[in-house]
Length: 172
Image 1 (cartoon, rainbow, N blue to C red):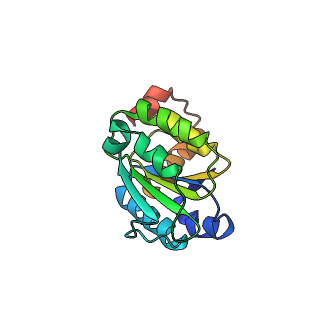
Image 2: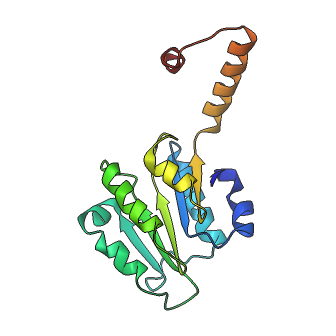
Image 3: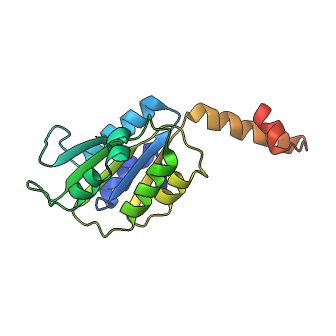
């Protein structure tokens, strides 16, 4: 399921038992704010090494067994083990997609996986993967002003009966 960053708190109050949280977009401050909001609402102690594991794209790509080993262990303290993955610097997204595809096919009950990514198009395979998960949520973090401008532009073009090709629209 895909939600906007301003819906996180309300959504998580109703759906605390999701396994996957995927945060992405072009607004880096909003990504960090959304990440913190998820940690706060789910009461995740970011500094507790017994309940929270941090991985980056290099660790994930160099040895994906690290992630799978963590998924094979149970939380010592608390109900969930939290795995925080940062892929914001990654250029090898096809390899990461393959890893995530494998992970999302596992039956995960006692883990939460929270992933931070940078700008990915809505049709990117990783975004589609997390958008379609029943036990996950993706949070789009884009500048609201950009979508507002796009909406106004679409309305204006429609009112004036102006049809543009996708490439012409992109050049605006």
